[in-house]
Length: 316
Ligand code: NAD
Image (cartoon, rainbow, N blue to C red; front, side, top):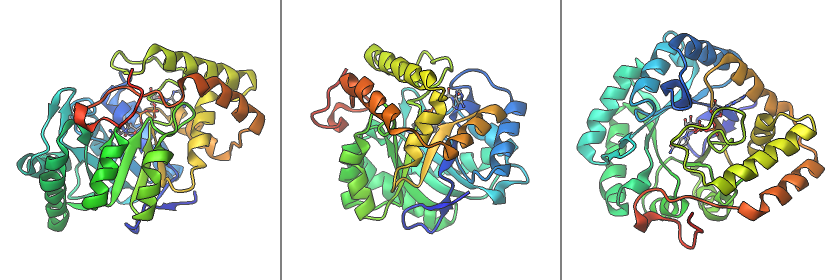
């Protein structure tokens, strides 16, 4: 698989990355055995970037991924996060980050991660993230427990404000660049590119809306977006195209995104998703999808502190 540079880190990552949140039962129950098989299949087929967080399954995903990676740790680049521990439990303080990395390393059965990211920073204040969180991440990097550091958020302008003043190695955006919503390129990509910060695009299926999988109760998408997703799925199916592969194929064409993280928890999903690398969507289908998504184009939902919300967004 053709690897891509992750910003200026020197790391080269697979265009499709393994999103491990489903290993924490975030989208429905899966077993350790199934998780392990999916992880091994992904490694065997050339996926080298794995992303997890203590938040996913409230540490379950990290524990499962750690078990699955036993004996294979050197084959992958491993990213985890800190600062978010439950739907409403956040702590971006330096003290918590220092204990968080040790807990994650233990669950992941390794002595360092390749990327350590502050998770969903829109739930912290910009001031704390800049003055305490990022410096603490750099300290952890200096200690050798993480090779590189990054931030993740649904709110793109917040990440831009931070990277303009406080450099990090990577930024992760989710649900802001895919067949349904595409404002990542208006807001975040140009700055990340100019600063050679690695850009990670997550949730190419809009956290499952473009798949046939059951939508979890926590999913924040408003009904109009769900309806649009259904229309897009139907358009794809009418052409004999798997909507999951269509959604992924679109995302991996991005010229600056290093890796597109898709949540997977079975061998079958890994195989189907990698099939997207060989798919080229017909322009006429893309045009139909474009027309179908126009009414809800760039519809976003609230996330985090009000002061961190992207400006002039249409909140739903
Ligand atoms: P996603 O868009 O990748 O969708 C995941 C859903 O799609 C799951 O229900 C999964 O079972 C289903 N799916 C995947 N492949 C399928 C297939 N071939 N057939 C049928 N269904 C399929 O959403 P996501 O998992 O939220 O995002 C991917 C990863 O990105 C996460 O696992 C996580 O690692 C990362 N992420 C990070 C953040 C953050 O840091 N704030 C936010 C969102 C996602």
